Image (cartoon, rainbow, N blue to C red; front, side):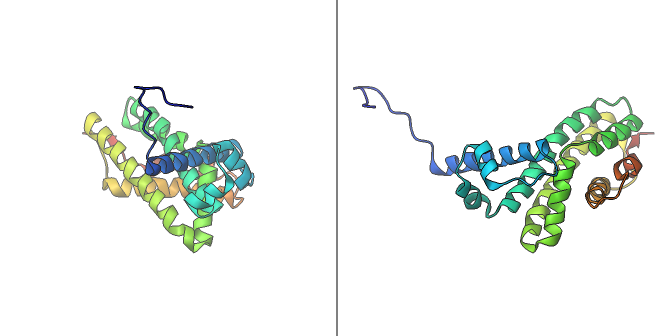
Length: 202
């Protein structure tokens, strides 16, 4: 379209920003598909179609489909934890907080894709650093959340904040891995609330 006299043309989006936007869109689409279609093998073509990109853009931005699925699974989990954090923040006391957090996490629809991502990190060395980065991001986010809650509610821990978070998520993710391995009743049988030492201040 010909530019009219005196009309200013919109500045094009910087290439770097476009790349970040595209990468994020691919991750969001893959995360949504992982949760909507648990246990199903997703193809590069359907992920690309859902994201509105070309299939070769997935390998360009992520290297492989498996790498993308690791990113996507943890993105879905981080989204889900925001909802769990709101549930915990509304608990009237520390005991209710422990129950709500444990029950909420074990019911997350993003846990099965994350278990798959963890299994991929175990079996494929090139994916291990990707898993490690996301697990530590999950830990840091949880630590910030719990620190704010402890300070605002006057609750205390029987151990360090870092150990509290690592113990809790190790149990939750371990239960997800066992479930993926075919161990029946894992989620219901895990006393996830018992891994938390959060209690009302004396």
